Image 1 (cartoon, rainbow, N blue to C red):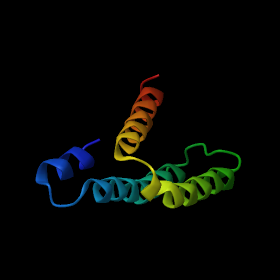
Image 2: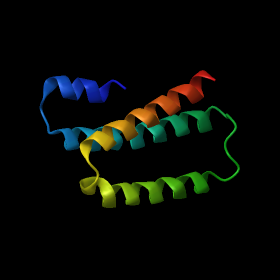
Image 3: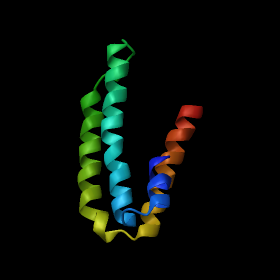
Length: 91
């Protein structure tokens, strides 16, 4: 939620590159979050590998379709994902 607007204001890269960078940052942040919860003894899903498989399939499809999707739809999709994540945390 912070990285994309920050990179947009700096105008250092093209719009497609900014989206790719924002998505690329999500993986290490998610891994750190997972490890933090795991080491703290928080409850984990019964089968975390199913979540990983879904992420791999989604990542492969995203990489395949990335150049074919208009930028307006990339903006909408990323906005919807951020909104969905925020609502899940709030509820």
